[in-house]
Image (cartoon, rainbow, N blue to C red):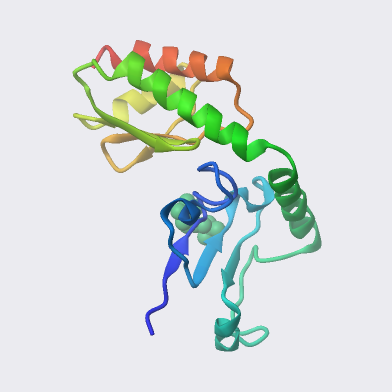
Length: 180
Ligand SMILES: *Cc1c(COP(=O)(O)O)cnc(C)c1O
């Protein structure tokens, strides 16, 4: 038997417009890992697996510093309820499409930009040169962005982001990118 484990720590909890990213690809993992957005940033982590794998772990056989705790679990439940009962994931899908379109329209013609891709509100701007100086300059301008490797600017904004905030961010990125 081969067990498929998918790390959904970053891609899970609505980030890509579905509860878990694997749902986009017609695959069925045996185990997924969750953390970060699971309790909206409150420290928590979880490993979820199919029932038939349960025997592999007996109670207490696998420790975790931030695994559980009443406060963390309450924050996790509130997060899940918000995601499943509201229309937050539709918002993520809609705003993700909007952001990708805006970024593509506004940035793809710059010579420093190689490719722009994303799913939901997880977006990568692949550049032709290492992006460390670009990241630094964006930070100075007040835009917090991450890297994904040496050449990709990673955007993973709040799932509650608005169109106006996306416009602002794209304008800032353009100001910085066009200098490179
Ligand atoms: C942050 C992160 C982790 C690590 O999660 P911890 O709860 O800090 O162990 C694992 N995978 C991905 C994709 C992450 O972004």
